[in-house]
Amino acid sequence: SLPVSPSVSTSLVPWSSQASPSCLFCSLMDFHLAQVQLRWFQGQQELLGHVLAPNVVPNGDWTHQLLVLLET
Image (cartoon, one colour):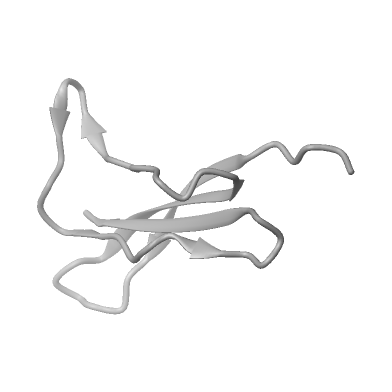
């Protein structure tokens, strides 16, 4: 079988809370290493607050996925 190239996408999506009207959503899909970090930066500063990052999830085909949200 051919190797699968990982894909990354980001988008701004509405959030259900009125105190936080939207969030940045990043999905990292179809990567092979289970040990991966996905971090948000603004300029040189890493954004640590309001980051929702569940665990890496296996896809069942030796690839994994990770979804990370940043409340704006």
